Amino acid sequence: MSIRDDLTTTGVWYFTDGMAAGEAAEFAGRVESLGYSTLWLPDTVGRDPFAHIAWLGSQTTTLNFATGIANIFHRHPGPMKQVANTLGEQTGGRFMLGLGVSHGPMVAGLRGLDYSKPLTKMREYLAAMEAQPFAGQQPAEPVPVVLAALGPKMLELSVSDADGAHPYWTAPEHTHMARETIGPDGLLCVEQKVCLTTDAEAARAAALAQLSIYANLPNYRNNWKRMGFTEDEIEQRDQRFVDAVFVWGDEDRIRAGVQAHYDAGATHVCVQPVMPGGERALDMRVLELLAPNA
Image (cartoon, rainbow, N blue to C red; front, side, top):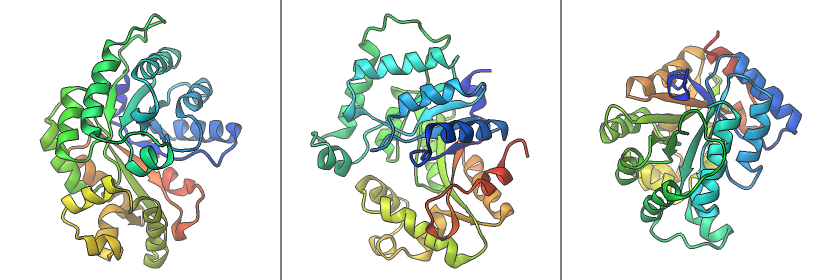
């Protein structure tokens, strides 16, 4: 079965930077045993995701891996093609390359790189990556490429120049819009944060802890406004806004929140478990409850 076929099964999106290498391998093995199809790993200021996936791929047998997302400003398109093909070959086709333009504060602020015209940069980057030579062992099938796409133009690019989109921090209404934009055939791999608690105060504390990281990043903020939330609702963390982008509750409510993305047109949903109360720790309970093998 190809990774494209596997994507019809739910996956997991998670930061493993707080885990030692052996612990991360145990976590990946547990995700695999629960029947999840794909483990998505970020590219921020922690581990190099490609080196980490090479390690985790060697410790698993069926679990797919994807970058959510690899920052194109930080890597030349030639080496990006090299590492994608290397992982595709070494994992036996269990790798998908998620690419994105990240955010100005990360690219220009932290790294000191030019962040002008990110859409143009992505278009040029994909063309350059395609044109780059690769003399190593080819993977049995081409490595799928998905783009961190939120707005209409990047969504359109995700199917004209890549295999689909990986929206992050959205809601089923956005998934519906994204599916209409990319058409029926493009991959639509949606991230959704989930929190297993019926305590509204603990759930919203968890949401606020997550939003403290993301709410001031312009690409997310602008997308939430396109989704119909006001600047004030976002700034004040209004309940309507929080409950739309953050799924919390008992097992049935969380399952319904995930299913809503599938009903809206998602190919694949990768759930990101969040601990109630805002504690930065792994909550395996929700992954066990939502497990495809459950």
